[in-house]
Image (cartoon, rainbow, N blue to C red; front, side, top):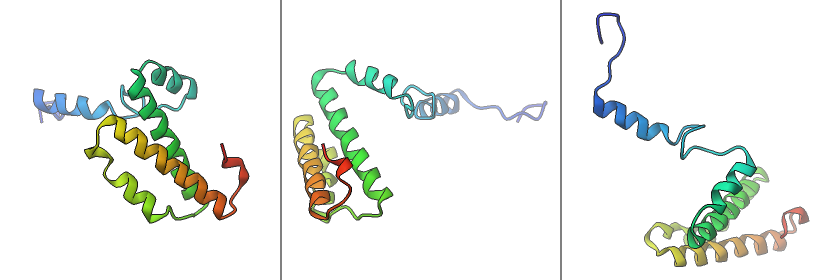
Length: 118
């Protein structure tokens, strides 16, 4: 604290706070509320990263739907995505596609809202 009673941060603390701030709303890596801005950023990615981002978004949307409807995600799907971080990008894409397909089939089997079908 300095003589004015203000908290002073070291250079390392400022850098760390700046890195964390990237993930805050409005930050470089923060959530994007504007769907057009989101699509613009996705389109700017290299093809493989773009496909991974699209499949990840589909998975997140499905998970949100399951949560809203208070439906448990099947354990086999959780097992599928549990090891994504250890896989190559091409394998992550394949696993996410399989998981998304499994979730859609599960919704169809339990007779949920047909609006979610793609």
